[in-house]
Image (cartoon, rainbow, N blue to C red; front, side, top):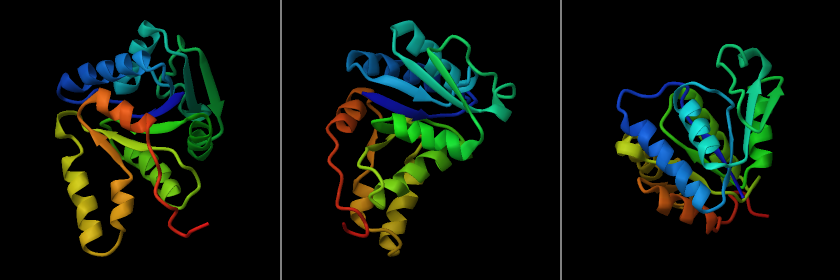
Length: 187
């Protein structure tokens, strides 16, 4: 099994983000879940990769060639796939992942998890999309998702399809046992 993990190229303002990222990786190792991620060695991406190296996960990094020097590509991971652009990066990550996890991050992290969540709603894949809600980071976003349902812009079943937890053990367990809802447009 392999998890695609989307996360920030910054570490965040509280050490809890790095600590809990490391904790997630240890749980992944316990459950024999390898890693595919953005390929960077800075921020939470770097913390994620460094811990994955430490615990012996197989790690695939995927980075557009224009970002290899800007994001400081991690040189100690098992594989670094250099791709043409962000679209190819997301496609390669989705193809090689069995499920997806968003850690705290910025707009890029959200864009990545939103795309795979949308693909899941449309039935393009049947993989879990998870939010590791460290320190309540995603609480305002989750409240907005509920507003989308209340205002009639999203079905409750597509909110319910998300795996959300502040416990890495529960997050990984739910992602591994995920059963998708029926696709939005039927089959």
